[in-house]
Image (tube, rainbow, N blue to C red; front, side, top):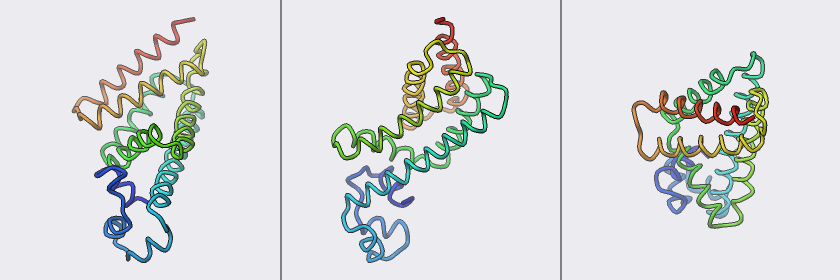
Length: 182
């Protein structure tokens, strides 16, 4: 699955072939075709794998923050630090996630996977914003997630050395403004 995601990240969904995945993963072509009879099955399995991985990581992050007295700044620091590490080590996988978003815009079959992704992001942010005393945590979580996705996409597309600092400042400003809307 990791090999498929790396290919998606480098070449897009159209770059996924059984042969390309086998070469990337260092396995036989027969092994890939045996497990995934069609290219669509291979792509869908990779996207589901990425979803499960991202969902698990987001939930683990949310749980780790629940154990501590909640502070908006600590939450944003942890979230941005997590994604800084991710983008430096797993950029192709995150690019593959954005490819999945575009695929969902074009094809119905990818929409449930992407909807679950967004829902998990929103739930995690909603928990944090409730703790921060947001007057409308669900709606504010949707705005926060949209901003976070945009910041990550911008960093993938046009990397900046000051991303950590800028992202933290922008997200803190957003959350501060949302909480002040009481």
